[in-house]
Length: 312
Ligand SMILES: NC(=O)c1ccc[n+]([C@@H]2O[C@H](COP(=O)([O-])OP(=O)(O)OC[C@H]3O[C@@H](n4cnc5c(N)ncnc54)[C@H](OP(=O)(O)O)[C@@H]3O)[C@@H](O)[C@H]2O)c1
Image (cartoon, rainbow, N blue to C red; front, side, top):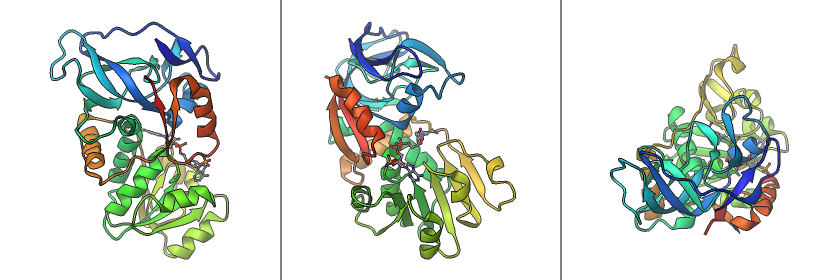
């Protein structure tokens, strides 16, 4: 099959021919129709996961997938060949990802059937970013009327988090570069979004909107300690980039270090919200699998939202 692979790390992803995987006991073989790029893929290619997870080469990249069940491993229940499914490919090692014509996934975790009304291109860009946005907002228990600063709002996780935070009735302060990124972020929801330019004086811009500090921060990008300093006493911060409580010693704030788990309950809820029109998957570009090099270039060049990849 054709797949987006790395021969070593760090290295640039390339489309190559690899063996089509066989589903083991408890696994589904999924024919991938759509996938998407995540910050995780660029981190793996850059070699940032070395020493943290086993790497199996040629390493097939990719987390998100949407497609149809092609075959069932031994003992699988609850799925049938031909089912439309989507989710997040998770293995205890790196190398069996979803940026490929086929992927094997555990039937018990990270995959659900796609409901009617969920477009396959949206489904392939939803799982990882959507689950991370939900888990992060739940971690800080964002409530109606509270003020949240979302740092990294222009990215995949952030653009979904902005929509969730607005739907919870929060006052949203969101980071973006001036110009197209700012227009993209303000267009994510009908609710008012206060955009701040992260390339300028972030502290001053946020203080002008929330003089007493914000109730919560989603740290998806940027300097976590600086962001934590913008919280009111007793405020909460969720970090997807590894900030921990020890990094804010002496401050009266709580830090939640996020490790998102895209379980079936979260995936099903995300899918239903998209199918009902309550949530929009912010796909801003779609590339065929063969042009994934260009997709990674666009990902690294400030393209807002999600970059989708069509795999068949
Ligand atoms: N822990 C977990 O479970 C988990 C799960 C998913 C993701 N993550 C991590 O969470 C982060 C966000 O993921 P993602 O997929 O949304 O990545 P992404 O699509 O690359 O989004 C990151 C966004 O942040 C912007 N940005 C860059 N520097 C910034 C700064 N100093 N202040 C504010 N915004 C800035 C980027 O804009 P430009 O492109 O214009 O620079 C980009 O739009 C990544 O580091 C990813 O690895 C962790």
